[in-house]
Image 1: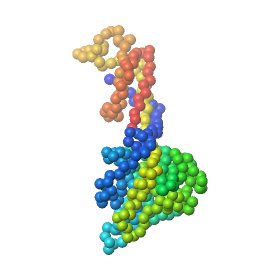
Image 2: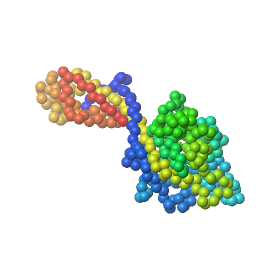
Image 3: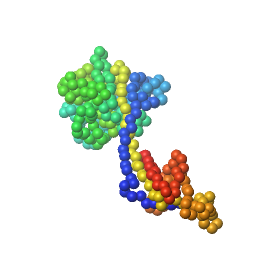
Image 4: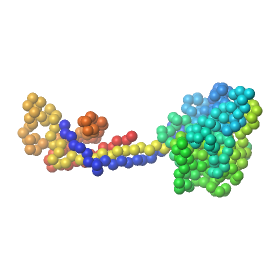
Length: 332
């Protein structure tokens, strides 16, 4: 066995983006939306709806929820304590997750709101993040349609929150903005929300949806069981009939170039080459004219501990008249 220390220029690092359809089976377009009647009728349904792609209810695609700063839009936990309800809990959770500050509020293109709808993609649907510019979410309310995408392809400076990158949700499809109104925003209420690719979440601005397609959550404080803000957004998605998005994963690769020179790695400790009893070369012709085959490259640390093994697709003949270049690729 022979060892050789690597030089600095033997290493090259590369990063490639790999994309895939977001939904089950790597499909980019979801057209079937099913909820569980059991969950909707349970206490969980007060907080969120899980949405599936089939009636078998095996693969969750995303979840829908509604949050309100003042706790409106859902029943109070205790009638004696106003403003403490599932909607206030949801608001606080997303505010902490995204903004990291309990004194901050969501601002959508300059318009600050007191409530949100949120769509959170199930963690099993993606490995790292969502692909900016791939979203087309179709909403329908009555006879009114709204196509939503993100403005990632139009911005030159990326904004960040505690949850990573943030882009504005605007009218348009697949990253192409509908400029009927400036920047694809609603006429009076700013953008249609935020797209947070690093946590696979869409925060929707109810004010903008109300202005554009009259999709308005119930905000009364004495909420009744018939008011269902999670169901309101779910119905708009079902009627819209299409949700398109892709996932994205960055694959980082280390390329290590192994360069056996003409004078290196020409002898072997294999029993067919060296006598186990005397340590001598078995065949005298191999003393000055050895013939060996490289089959494996082992990568070791400074303590001579084996870290990785690379197998060649076929044995590589090596002698004093030949040099080789073996490229080892490590993906992580």
